[in-house]
Image (cartoon, rainbow, N blue to C red):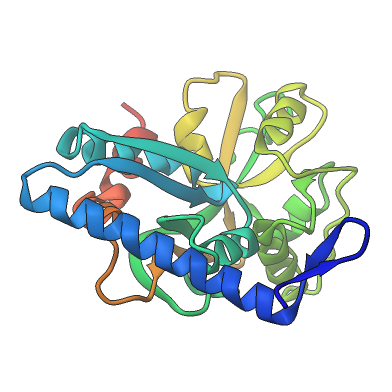
Length: 260
């Protein structure tokens, strides 16, 4: 029996669940086989499905742009997902690859390729910044009126651990699962926030905001590409990992963030 049924469908039996898992793998392998044949014909086709954590969204176009130039007949779908959602989607063959943290709460049964080291900035209105300040300690940052991501997001759990390592406890007055909401509250002038440095790359032209380096401690962690640990690696995942490893994101961010 594969199906639990009364007067209507009630669900799958354990055997049915296993059949669904195998079916997903068979269909994924079939699609990968077709794509691999197209590669031998000189043209990769299909749809690249990516899961990207919100903290890495500002970086993603730096990889998808050269990928699209190299493979113009591949469509690209980018989904904003938590690291846990990326893990589950890779396990169920719902994604070709993901971009997420490689060290903190690392994903299981995946191949990895490092992209860049994330660090943290304190963002606030220029009016609220102390005169001449270019850095801020975690103690002073945590004492500010903060808008932060909520604890369902891995980035917030990282921030909590860093603060607690200094005997501090973040107490934001606004929490959200959206960086857009964070930016909205910071731009209002009432709130400040702690963000990955890549978001300064997106908002570098916003003259009302000031970005301060967080010190005591200075913390960095690796963000990279993950794909299912299968051999052979599906062609779309292989091509995306190749594109990612050829881009110097550290240089791109440094060039964008340094004053002219």
